Image (cartoon, rainbow over all chains, first blue to last red):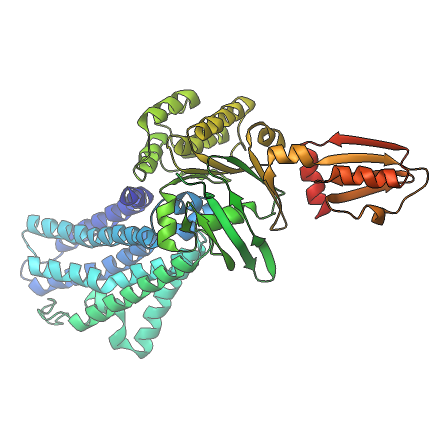
Length: 236
Length: 297
């Protein structure tokens, strides 16, 4: 039932984001491929790469929004004593919220690319499943750190607007600072495929940046662990 | 079934910086009793209850509920399976319908009773398909009470349960509490409604500024608390009545009013030694006991 509660809490945000991402990708690829000549193979791949750039922006915004809420927010709106009186641990409460969010984040990465796959197939420029899978993997594997950041911020800040504003601020600041000084560690570039794209063919390399993905997932795990500790120690 | 208290705390304390919300609370709530927890706003009632339910970590002290340590998260989770709790502000998820709320809550408890749920739904006349956020305050209170009363827990904890209810709703609530108690459920509830407490409570605890100042059965309070009005030939110093049981003295010229929690005989004897012209002893109600106690502190 906790899963059901988490779904009810996030479904409108999730469905709105899923519809936006899918419609954007489908329309963008459909419209843009109509402008290409059939022989411009690499330009079509470049189009997919550009699509990923836009998708990353919208996907990160979406997963940060999905990471908002939780028991701290419930405390602000007065429902935390109902949730905390249930015979479940705080760890489980957070775990279910994370589980729901991760599944939704995965769907938000997958569905737009599935739409692109079908739209490009209908336009007789089928994109390879390997490329689609690689883009999805980069989004989820590299980008879950943004969702974890949102969970951590929402475990510390209760404001309906301050929490997402702070999370978006950190995302933006991190992208700027890492790009200026530590470009190789910039998660944003990892997720967009910047580190794995072949600039001639605009195809993602078969050798994905596994080390970067693993590091990003580790950072996400640390943030989620910190969120759990914060939640367990907090008074409501 | 043992006779050990369902709630037992020892020097339970909660501080926020320099401010102490609850100070060395030693509470003992008897099994199969209806215990009222009284106190002014901000006296520490809700904080105490939240400590019992593991929502707030005590700064010091310890406590058990149904024999489980409240400060141990695993034990606290287990004890919450056997407790029905209605919080002060009757929190409910606004995005759920009445039916979804009932299905959601019932899934967590093995002591949920469908027959009671149906009967309460009929009594309360709750619209199953309505979103909770569209319900009136009274309806929300009824739904919150239904979530507690559709179970047969070992302990029922209610924080100001009658708030938001009309007189008919309050009457139903009091009857439901008595019925629960008759079925072996221990009831611990906080309230500002002294008349309600006098009608149903077996025991009364009064908390003031985070400290427990009264812990007795209602019968004991009725038996021992007295107001003794005295008239003397000339004025008498208050220190003459500095004896056990005297809680508060008011003097006005030759007249003196003594509020005693026990030992009324001792006060009368003292008055007679001081040649009182008139001695009038009157029993006091819970309202007066409460007001005098919090005034005293």
